[in-house]
Image (tube, rainbow, N blue to C red; front, side, top):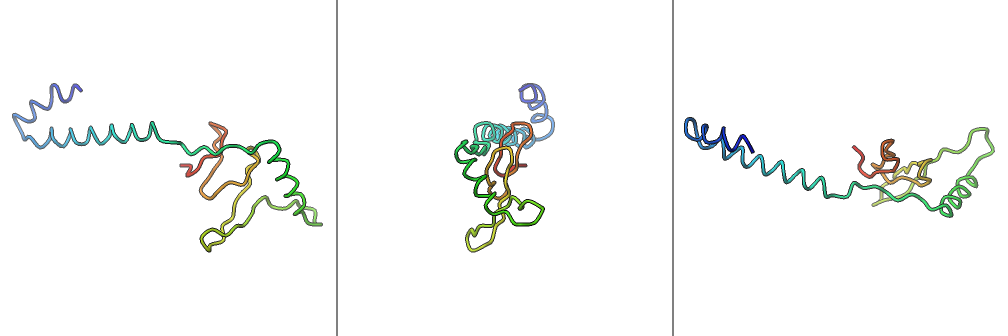
Length: 114
């Protein structure tokens, strides 16, 4: 606000009108990006219900082998003719979709975590 009130008139009068115009365009672009980020869904995935978690635990235990080590908590599925490995989240008790990670701050699985 102060830049447009004090500096822009000086720059437009003494240098060129292009600087205030570019600054105004950039200002509206930054504000629009801020508003889009503020109102967009963060991509939090709902946790498994207790009954879903119990069923999933039974299913994973049935996949166990006779070796000493427990089975890896991953599952391979076919998506658009490609084999994709889904990892299991111990906290949320569900298989996470690709590009999903568990956030330690909000304690939820988040899609496209960055």
